[in-house]
Picture 1: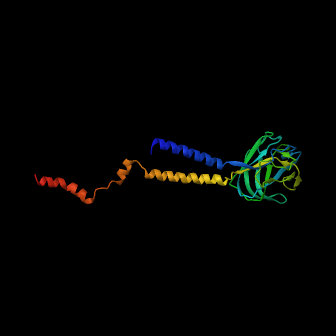
Picture 2: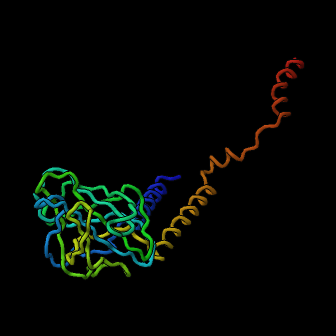
Picture 3: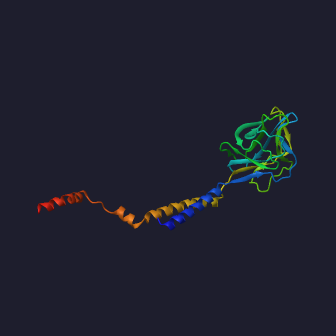
Amino acid sequence: MTILYRLRLHLFLTTLLATSASLLAQVTAVSNVGQTFAFDQIVGQATDFDFYQAFNFTTGSTSTTLASITISAGASTATASGFSMSLYSGFSSGPTGLLASLNGSSTPAGVGVSYSYVPASSITLAPGTTYWVLATALGMPSNTYYSIQGTSSTSEDSSVFSGWSIGNTEMFTTTAGASWFSSATIPMFSVQVAAIPEPSESAFVFGTVGLLAFVALKQRRHRNPKEANQSSATPPSVTDRAGARSAPAGGLAHL
C-alpha cells in the first residue's frame, strides 16, 4: 500500500467519521425557552412550604432516544446541593412510573442559565406519548430554594419537531407530594433527542461503507508484485528436496 494511498484513505475515513458523528448529534425536539418570561417556579423550601414542580411534554409520531432535558434556571436562595430531576411515564395524584433519574447540576443557581440533565440509562421515547418531568430539592434548609423560569405562553418555539408539544399546565405541590395543584405558568425547558437521519443521509452512510469494502477488495487484488510472486511461488516437492540432499553423495561416488 503506497503512502499516497494511505493518506487518501485516512482522509476519506476522517470525513466519514465526521459525517457519522453529525448524524448522531443531539437535536432539540421541543422547546418553550424562547417564550416570554413570567414567573419563577420554586423548587425547594419557601415560606415553610416544600415545593415540587411537575411538567410534561408529548412526543411526535416517531420513536426517539432521549438525550437530555434542559431547564432555564430562575432565582435562588440556596447554596447547598439538593436539586434533582427525574422522568416519569404518567401522572395520577402525582408522578407515576419512574423511568429514569436525570443526572445534572444539583446547584442550578445562575438566573437565566441553561442546565442540562441526562438520563442515567438509555431511554427510548415512544411515539405519541406524554412524559412527566419532576423537579425536587429534597432536604433543603428552611427558606432555601432553587427555581425554574416560567412562562404563561402555551406556545412552543418555532423549530420544534412535527407533533411534539409541551403541556399547557404544570402541576406543583407545596406539601412534598401530599397534594397537587395545577398552574398555568409553565417551566421553561427543552427536550433534546438523538438526531434521526434523513433517508438521503442513511443512504450516504451505507454507500460509503460499501465503497470502503470495494476499495479494500480492490487493494487486496492489486498487492505489491513482489508479495504476489512470493506468495504464488510453487514450493519444492518432497522428491526435489530429497534429490537436493542426495546430490552431494552421488557426486562423491564419481570421485
